Image (cartoon, rainbow, N blue to C red; front, side):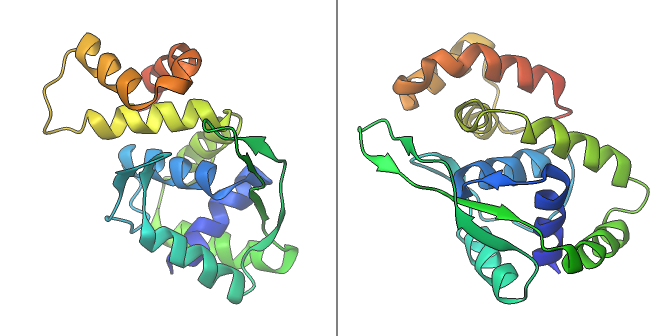
Length: 176
């Protein structure tokens, strides 16, 4: 049940501010070898995006595995104010999310929790740049670091101030 896996990501994080951040966290977790069941990520305006994950978020809310509330507003690159939705896991759903995750990721729950915790501490913009770079440099690609970061800067010109932190984050992650 992918809804419970996504709820576990949110539960470990505590609160996740926005779908953009959650999308990037799930993408990077998958690139680190955790199969959460989303294989339709495509490069979109804010980096890798999965329509399937967006649907699963809605289902998780309907099943009572996630609660959604207004998050902290931020200003998009085009100057428009965005009010994201923040997500957290209701207390009665935590046990379900934890049990499903333990079955789906046997022997890796601690590693998973550590990685989720690390990603949760990152700023949304850093995750957006890091996930975009990880998407551009998929395993089948053979890009030099210079070429990769030039492409990322072209795709994300408003976020170049986040590139250094994104590089540091990617250096820490066990991407596959």
